[in-house]
Image (tube, rainbow, N blue to C red; front, side, top):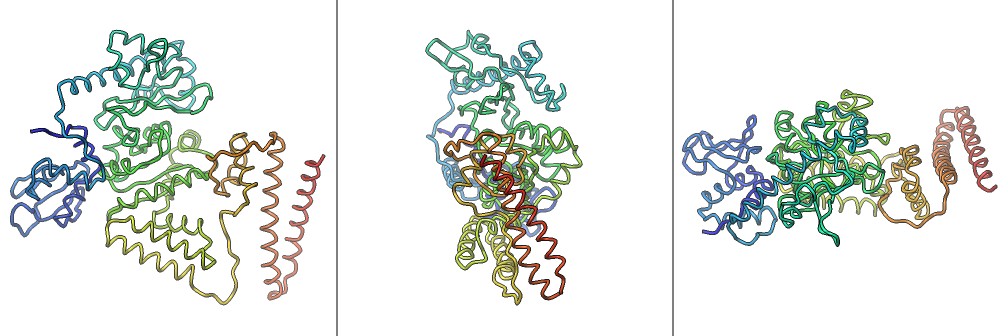
Length: 539
């Protein structure tokens, strides 16, 4: 009988949690590492049916039945293999491939693929410690990598010449091209990775299936990855997962960071449960893979606007995977730094503080809502209500969704709708700015990264998407810095003016005019600074 190939059935097992599949038929209760329930295959009153989520396996200690999501579906619903695969594919939301048996040629091709990528990794690793790779070795050591770390993660160097094309000259071209390591050009074969610091990418079984190359000359993009192949799909691959899997189990959580170097430094400095997506935004496939190992996830992103935006997107993706045993949190590294820099300069203790102070998902979603909508107005409240509803509808566990709805109903009543006798100053974290200012800031961030780093905290407060294209604003470095300083002074003056109004009201009650004089002095000084700055701009 024809069968689906192993790639597709493995994809189903990675995408679907066995707990989710079994719980459609059997109520389960978590006890320790396993879930327990009464066996659906024989009559019993005391639960002896065990489900291990991280292994994707079930076993009944009463009747001896055992297997995975496919065998469970076949047994439970009395259907054949093909029908079970069809049902599970629909549940996973992935299309069915053509039914086919894996041929001997396909098996041989996969073996050849792994042989080539493994041999290529050895070549790159050797090149790193030659004169050709000296600058790459200096760079990675400068990032705090020891030789032991370099060896463990197979880090290497792809030279400027066509080393792979030449080394595999006796290999059939189509098989070599299938790995993504080389391409066919007008004048023959040439290497895809040239003058790059090389990071092997392993699949969950520890086989090298692709590579990520980092530029060493400052060119963009910083990283290029092997294009998708038969054996490698970026959307379904988490960097470092092969090393992190057991640590995720022991730590009872997974940490997701933004890049390869961050992931390696985290793993080598006491956070072995860390992984990173590869050259693409976080996907549902990434979350599905992690949830099979553990449903406790900490997203650790940069604290700038881009990091906040990535975190908001991650929040929307993870909601359908929430269960009553999930603990999803969000941690942010501020000050223009990343986990790598925090660990190298401040050590594990500082990173522990960031992770331990992470924000629960229920609070982060509430923060997103209050940041993106002006809830002090009826229209803003309406928009915020619709947004929250759309997000909560993603939670598939109805009981859990009801708990979230109850929590937010309470917060909305206490924070949005409750009338108070005295007026309050409304504080909005993210200023609403007009288009010219937004475009100017966008231009400065992309044109002068050193200014973006110097004034990072102030710029990030505007929560602008800096990935959009903007026209050339014709600003030199000095003028751009003066613009940022003047904008910062203007925002400071606006805050002082609001504070002064509140102080006047308080002074009338408490007869304390000295506080008004103090803030008037601050306003005067700020205005003088702004006038001097504008005066120098006019010259």
